[in-house]
Length: 81
Figure 1 (cartoon, rainbow, N blue to C red):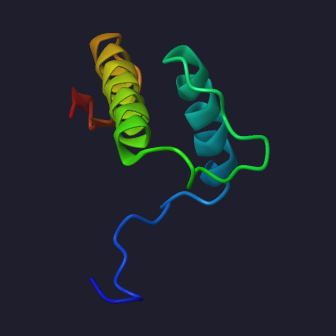
Figure 2: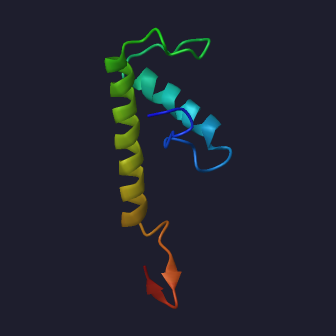
């Protein structure tokens, strides 16, 4: 993929700091010591991929629990969408 064609950009302004905090939290949970300088290049791709996988699983669990509890649902004209 050429430069300028990245599709993995953050869609919500201000979410980058929250995602970084979440990344560090998940890293500690799976036993990785987050780098003090923020540079992850010295970690193997396998470890970073595992961390990303855990992040996605937790985000999916959170979304499912919000949907099951009714939070986050839109209503239009009295009907739940």
